[in-house]
Length: 125
Image 1: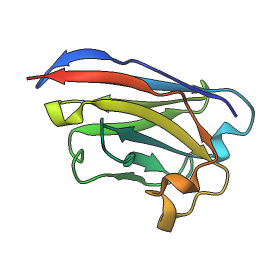
Image 2: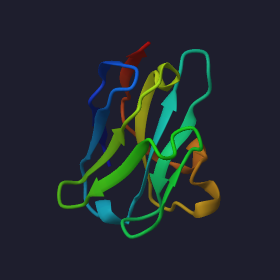
Image 3: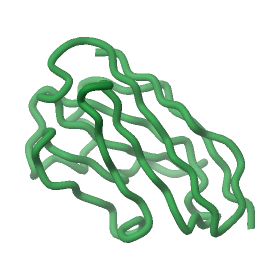
């Protein structure tokens, strides 16, 4: 599976942005998918993810109520709709896929087998 993320850029605080991650390969609907982010000088952190196409979506507390994860299996694409953006959301955002994702490790970067190249956006205050 190859992943490619799109949608980075510059946005003002309070604004919105949608990231996309296109996946190549087959059996996309069976993969657990997630978004992570990494700010300068910080560790990569979980943002949102879903175990499988029919599972529940999980969010980091810092983005809950502002970000929405979705997936379109027909397009092999996952999205991250981000609203009410804050300067602290500034980071490189990565999409990730796992062949064998389980709930106890959904927030663990080590649980993911495939990573996109990352897309960066900056939220200005």
